[in-house]
Length: 342
Image 1 (spheres, rainbow, N blue to C red):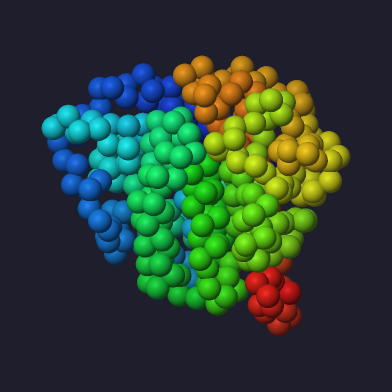
Image 2 (cartoon, one colour; image 1 turned 180 degrees about the vertical axis):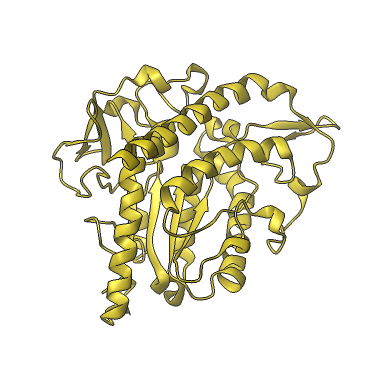
């Protein structure tokens, strides 16, 4: 219990700092000026460069599984020394990397407590792009996804060495996770313990088109995809971030029913069966509301708090699914049949 409280406090502290940082970034966005935009303009990035990884092979424990984590959106549009406005991150810029690292700190505490942690820097699209809406997001997303695709391929070829792995992504990172699963071959999918899509939605069409996206139904099913988005009221759903949700699981109970379950002493959550989002009762939405982001994250949308709200539950669930995967390995039950773990 004491350890859980300490973990909760640590995660909450970092999360608050991250939320404050977003406000600072918005305030300073017009003053960011970089002398070298080369890394933003290259066709491809070489992920054999250790500088493109938050955590790389130097700390691998071969007895453990891996976590491949994809960052959320951490940057705004920025202007280089020639006055050109860029809509993608510059992975070589130290200021932008510090902003990305704040998310990685939280993610490593949650997802990689019992696993190796790998997280690539990538040319993610800016918050401005998301604010402009889905058409702009899709137009600019290909560069970001190409980087993630390259990083994941390098990870599988050079760093993973055949170990089981967990995919996890938050917000824009969740979108990337969905796309990776769509492209995944059966051999790779067979090593995927689970995929966490935090703060992003999966549509009915995507479920129909990709049999490897298998919605999680309980705490220990493997090869499945965990999806959740949280609001205090359905009027606060962000269509740009969450899309038209077709699936959800409650991290506080690891069930897909509509029963309410406590997250802490004051907050409980339940799934709304129509919109497939989690409704948080007892949470003060003003505590994480940023008016300048209202077009993207309306009042009552808890997008900024997804990881901190469910941090303890996610941390234990990764361990649960890893144990389930190991047990299935020992029993010889891990096979691929029509895109699903059996």
